[in-house]
Length: 346
Image 1 (cartoon, rainbow, N blue to C red):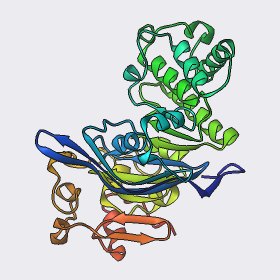
Image 2 (image 1 turned 90 degrees about the vertical axis):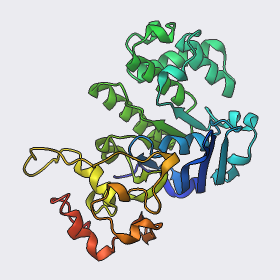
Image 3 (image 1 turned 90 degrees about the horizontal axis):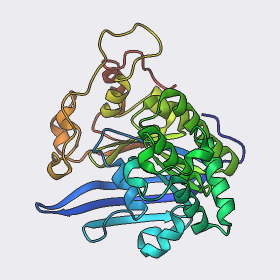
């Protein structure tokens, strides 16, 4: 993916190292995220993919300080513009959230307050972080609602959340997240409940945020088509760990991990013969409270063997990394049994 001028992916905006998140439950401590590390460069779009329960949303909510500190234990280091944000107080984090880091919540029902109009809520966020008059904030809210594709934004600005459809509420949440032109936007399934036309509008809006303001974006999605269109780099998560990461072209052309093979095989091919039935990954993701020993994906992997009962090694090559026992020289032959049209990135 060609990056716009002025983008500096080599200049780190967010640096996450060894992030581990566990929750206190009736059955004891449950680890939902285990030793996750990644970096986001300025103006870079990084997509996090994986099935529900893989730890994508928990990782980002923990970074933003949106988990209950009474029942959550967070370990590791998170630097945002060189500041250790995990060690900040709630008051300090509130200054950063909304202004420097925006969040598009996966569930618009819980992201909006039912007793206030959507226009008031957007304007209130703008005024909380900027010195601006109520009238100017309202006009900005109307402009944002129009940009995310809501019809008659001057009317919608005075509507309450219950008066909007699910897709409309989602667009209102997106407008709120974009209101202060954040340096980092965390977009958790931003196109959920939107039709294809509005999806395209929203994705173009995210691209414009990067193009005009140099914003970085963390995009959580299940849609591999969106990943291929939007992302510079991809992190594949499974059972609370990053099992593979690399540049988008490398992940699509030469995936290393069997779980990534399964994700790519489950989408219709754009070339070649259309299969009678799409490939699916057998079984279901494990519960964080009952993870298998060693490789979390082993129970669902057709190539598992004895070493998979232990923690897999981290294999790296340049910007690529993967957690798997399969030797590099064996990858392509095994992968072709699932992705026959997929070849080496060379």
